[in-house]
Length: 188
Image (cartoon, rainbow, N blue to C red; front, side):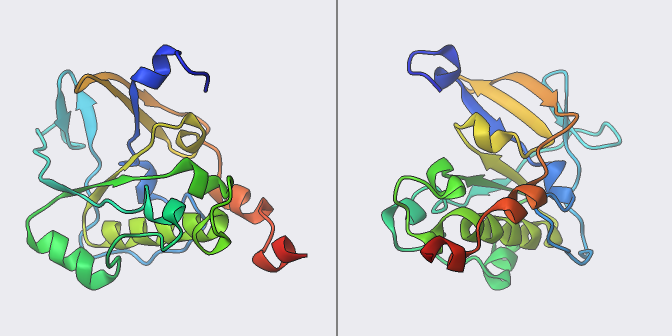
């Protein structure tokens, strides 16, 4: 995206509320005991599928936006089931997960262990773990390239919702992952 364009000033939030329920990265997930609720915007409120208001109680799960680029991991701290259960025990119902385009795309010298398909699989696995715990996920990016994988985009500016758009044909992440070279092919 070119500098100075209005879209740079807007925070593009990829709300994977609906997209994260499915298998957008091709990983088979067993059904969880309490699936994350589907949330949508109605007027100036968030509501569930029955139209009841939803109050988000959430946490920010930082790390995936910087650890990979700094070359020491994908997450800052644990990302296992025990850590997700801890989040759920706090009565949270949503997790904000910022992403890094450079790591997602595996470009600009990011270590292969933390980039490209490895990064994408780690994010997909973590989203699946969060969903199985009944948590809704908001994937956050400032990059429209990553947003192409989601079935829904929410755009915020100055803390206010500016757009809520369904994407009829999001890019199939499983196809994109399959087209990436394997690690051993990168070394050749």
